[in-house]
Length: 341
Figure 1 (cartoon, rainbow, N blue to C red):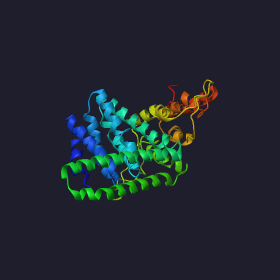
Figure 2 (figure 1 turned 180 degrees about the vertical axis):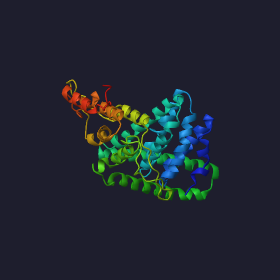
Figure 3 (figure 1 turned 90 degrees about the vertical axis):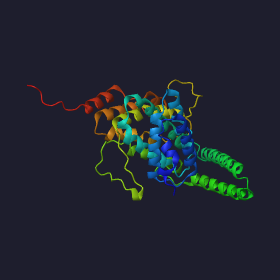
Figure 4 (figure 1 turned 30 degrees about the vertical axis):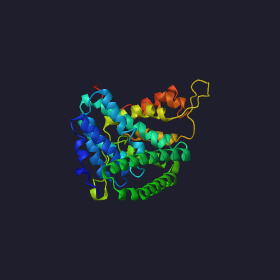
């Protein structure tokens, strides 16, 4: 087991020198892609370094490029056994440190959060839309990247060592890598499903992470167990409201980016998504906020998200008539206290 804190790139992630941070980010990316045994605590230590790496990045283009490198370029290539823990570590870090962000740095972190909502939909929704073909294509892409990284590492090692013993071990290493890739592909296709079946089990696991964190109806849960490092457990922060509102604001935006639509329909207001889409699962955390949150502003914001015109256009929701809207507004009215008379 590698001691994460002693790896040099973890300290270099928080450097004020951009060149050092870029080098550390590249090293960390290769490290994460090659490890399948990282615990949640180790990933939290890595995310602490990544959080401050992003904290020190300045200028909009640099920030946007780093946000995409940490999300769209990294998450789809992570080992399948690591990706959920990595995303959980991200949301724990964001929920824990969101209060510490000043107004000058808030926007770039909101963009990073948008990227992570989007890349999760891309990995768990878009790549699973066509179960076998989607998974095999993703697995093939991951295997290809791994082979390229392994080949590049071997080339560097050969140029330094130039000995025959390393050349003899190469075929065995390549065969071992291919066997590992095949096992990961089989795991990807035979993972047992949850309530929505094996096809959407990974998406459901990720939705559950969000329901424990930024989309949890309450900000404090007294029944939540404390941290237990021996069992690799760290409690997920609930909220805060600013983070909760941002996720609600971008939820439908990021869904729209990964959905494929049937363009053959010529009628207005009938832009239907293609294929099998788990609508109830995707809207479940929003519905839960609307029904279970004890805070009226959160319930209202969740209701606004569910009334988005695009959801009605896709056939996921029905437009409410004026009578139903008035009834809900009356039920949401709070007691204003006793009058002066």
